[in-house]
Length: 342
Ligand code: SF4
Image (cartoon, rainbow, N blue to C red; front, side, top):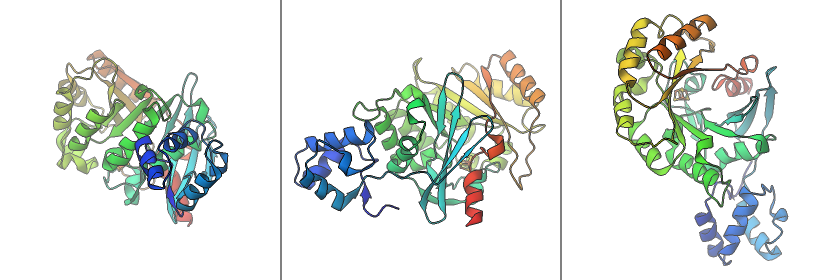
């Protein structure tokens, strides 16, 4: 548990200002950046080029901000779920998903979530807390497989754009030369479509964007995603149409398939109308049934047929592989289980 304010999660500008406040030269801030984000130290003692006196000053006012995971579960398919503790009874999870050519980490941005999507276990927990940029970065840097990572997706617990400032700060740390120096093309941020926050995100970051669509029909979407009553999917798509993304930035639409509910010919027709002419792709996701949910799962054959129907209409559509089902890799389930134990 941290007592002092954490250094992890601070930008280079913040670190320079902070050391100056402590009476040190600004370059010490740059040195700390290097130790935190390139050398991944866990203690002040490891910061070899910082004087003993300065280390003492720093450690009396700040913590590094590194916290280890408290639990890990491994699936038969190699997916791992890491559990991090934020505070008493407050947990978040990060899912590590190794594939042939890539290794992706799915990070959380909030403890719980206020958005109340009907299909989501995290939503059922309600909102508990925002994660700081440091707590988001910590999920990456404390990962034993950190050096194998090729991609990070903000698709764990929480709605990232409901914690915009901290998410943007974590993206700055991941993509700046003084930070992890990753290309923004290795990062995807998901959203259910909070338009004003989406505009800020698109302006300030170059990471890919994934929008949760799930059905093109207003009423049906409002039944499973309350956000539809505030920002309709049509408005979200219209907003995205007004941006020129160039060829590098990818916009995708996530579509959980609930068998017999949102995979009919009329859904294909309406999706074609909604996304006509847009340079985007649709990712179909098989629904992992969650305890107590009235929503139906879908069969593999149906999922494939639906993909083909959409592809035939010119919509580039892929099926996201289901991973880690045996360890409850569905959004929010691991931490729910941990909480109910407590
Ligand atoms: Fe929140 Fe995402 Fe779950 Fe909706 S799907 S309740 S936005 S975590």
